[in-house]
Length: 376
Image (cartoon, rainbow, N blue to C red; front, side, top):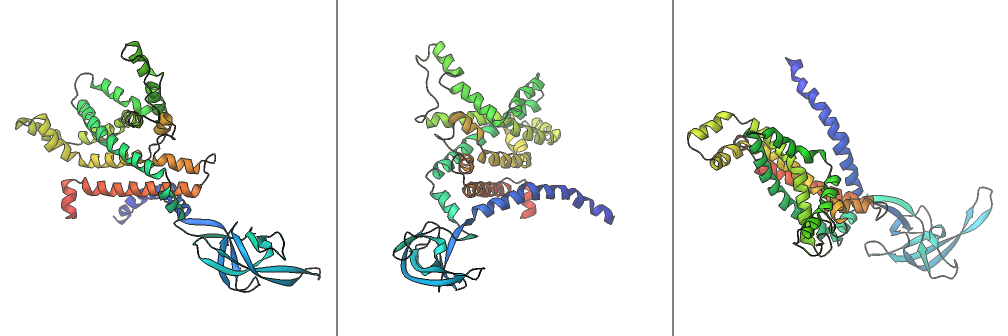
């Protein structure tokens, strides 16, 4: 009996390895990039000596003011001696505080080592330290508010519509009406298409010379094609993205709800019919309460995926007119644009924290009666 108790832990081991390799390790690396600052800083010394205590640090390219000079002799390996210049400098560090100390000429660019009154820091020591610089830069980025607002708006518009349609589609399949198998194949068509293909398809419908404009012009409804996708038509672009995402991903929610419906005993539905409950009453008082576990899974999955909407936005709008959080993550990481893995990591950590927060909210808010009783 004791051996059998170890079987569940052995079955759990592959999932733990998967989470460690494909979630914990990447997110740990992302968090490290997001919350650390790397760079070269020149340490200032209390005396003109490499072993003297450090009085401050300056970033590369900082302009400094020379207040004092010291010339020393350095003995080479051959026994010969050469002069080494040290300078006492003053400047403001990254925090804006004034620092003062001695530095070697090796770390400065100076026009005349004997008469120049200013110099510039050209080298230092590699430093990695905890910092909120990248998060502050992300929150103050002029595109961040637009990306966050658009992402939240898409979630608000997409998720309710998807769930209403998915429940209707699942009920149609569950009713086993004639040609219900054909409906299943039709509903499942978008599952075979990628995000990018879906975005290109809907772009082809709404572009200036697309299917919709061609139809409206040929029918005489419009004299000239209407430009749906342009900077002045933000509402239309959001509507097109919502339609594309609903069309593409509603089938995923439908599959989850169909699985939940099949787990509901038919006795419950038959009892509702016997007592004269209408279809709406059965849906409200029987089906939806028993579907809570499935709805919980579907809500978490779709909300997390909605935060990652990217390819459809790029295919329809190009990512410059209208942006989302995932697009900003890519823009900061793209070597052809900003080439800043630290900022991209900051965005990815922000998306992860929001996704985890929403998931915890769903786990708390959408609970079955049995779960609520156990936790009470």
